[in-house]
Image 1 (cartoon, chains in turn yellow, orange):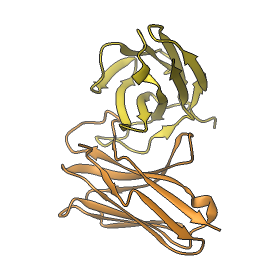
Image 2: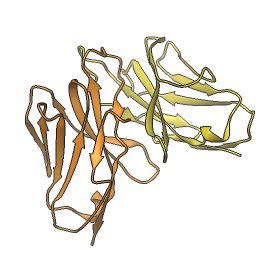
Image 3: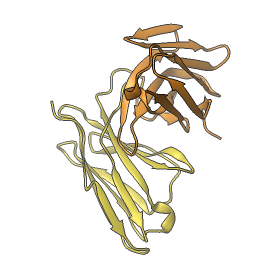
Length: 115
Length: 114
């Protein structure tokens, strides 16, 4: 079974530009969540999608957005990039069971550098 | 501040020794999970312990959970150089619903010297 695939793995942008990151979940996983990881703030939850609907959103400005397609693939977009957006963006998928959040399967991440 | 806070922040041990890492959290949880991250890579799930469980084992890993103290510990026995990584505890908050949101601590850097 293929794991979670994130593209691109590395990218460099300049301030003011926008970026789109892609995530393909494990086959059969309908929940996709996104996390931002920085040395200062650690891992922070961005948002989670299930069946093309955003179910939860973290404490990030509106410049951060996402969507999920009918095949469960997800994209996240960051507009008007700032230097502080430099981070490792991690996507995780899971197959929700019951009321708890179970094991998350993470991709290798997209390393964004904003110059 | 973070829901989950790990202790110590960094740990250096000799191969073959045991490594103990601790995590404290603030609010009620459904479960607590531990993840490992090798430098700059994605996170790998290690173990999940539910709020009604007190101890769980998986291979060389032993996790305990004390909900009265809101704390957990991860023990890696007979450590190997390949265990060198960052370790994170993550909590699934009670009442948050099945929304696949975990709250992560800042992580513990474990170095295992050959």
